Image (cartoon, rainbow, N blue to C red; front, side, top):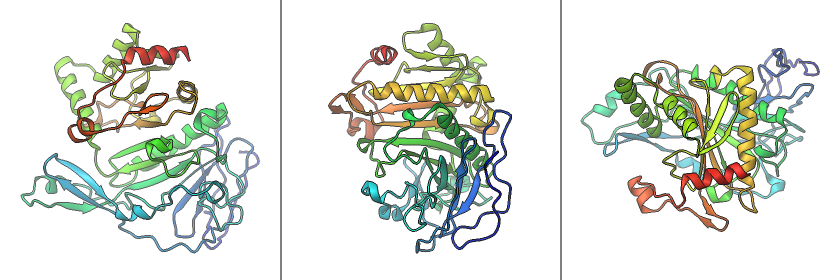
Length: 392
């Protein structure tokens, strides 16, 4: 890409690997990031807009050495599910003032997770990860069937942070179109990279926005997890999809999408490549699902035109969320991605957007019915939410 520099050599806490700066595709987009290394050895990747040249500096912070095994998996016999025990996350940064935000640019190399004067989009390994390290021996089935009551395994995997922009007060919905598309490109890049890592079973890109959701850093950002197992919700959906295929010979998600499009009352937006709708059995006060009109398993399967459309529709939906009430809506965004073979072959890439805000001044708390029994009770009808979002 014009304007990006070729960087060579080493700096303490800031080694740049000797490689050309990101080459551009025919559409003028970055195809690979500029890589950097933080003071404790963690990876940092810069994704740049055309004509932009990020200039990282050495990370001079006196960071403690990383714990090679910061977490542990423990098997819950009562549910058949793995639980991540990551006690060191208690020490993570908690609601710092704006001037001490670790996600804002740090031109001195002494204050920030991003040692640079400016950036467009960055991804780096989480300093306080729930999962870390890779291993090829990722078969936990023996532990799941073993007679012992207490079964554990190393908390291998990967946790990354993705900063959507250098603007501390911005949001994904406020990003210019090209910048939002760059975030999608970064998601796609990390999905491909992590799916190729040994021991990673599932790649999950997500965003938590708002203190009501539990966000501890106000800077617009998301996270990317490489899980060493299928998460419980994913496993449940795949079980349903597999049963549907055996019974009907078709894909469950594709059939649901077709039914929503035909029925129409819960559709929020439709484009050539994507459809957004409030699901028939929505759990959350505000919930929208975004599906590509073509069955794909993950972001790496989408064409450039589809990725363009995805970025535009996704940003549009978040803008509608922020216009529901007088203040920005707290939300969770979950990108459901699957491998294309084996137990995940019935998966259908889609995004689920959810908010716990059930009115302008009331929150939906996940109390006993939801938290203890996983029996959700909806306070509003999906049809009324869809109608409101269409108006916006």
